[in-house]
Length: 146
Ligand code: THU
Image (cartoon, rainbow, N blue to C red; front, side, top):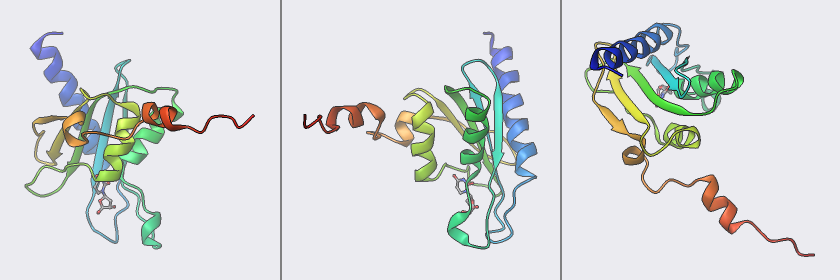
């Protein structure tokens, strides 16, 4: 793909994150987050944070975007844009790094951004080094006692 093509794809991902951020339900933290994922097929899925009066029941923007992706039958995340207001780029929380790792690769690009503009990409492998994964689970699973 050309540089111009990649820039246009990234702009579309940023726009999706920006649009969904406006729908955040964040009356408790008053901190709206938008996340948009691009999958291997080129499709885009977006989610915003949805808080709850029972605070621990709230979900992050990335979680909603992942749920939309899975519901649509997709599995492989190649690019992510996450947006929060303020001047510091929004980096995904620890739990969402693990959720992204379930469907991404070490090379999945995470653009930690603000609502003002897109940030520099980080590799998922740098944001969550030595991640726990299904490979490790398979290795340690109990053998049948039969
Ligand atoms: N939040 C996200 O949606 N994603 C993150 O990666 C960081 C935090 C949300 C959760 C909560 O609704 C609000 O931001 C404040 O923590």
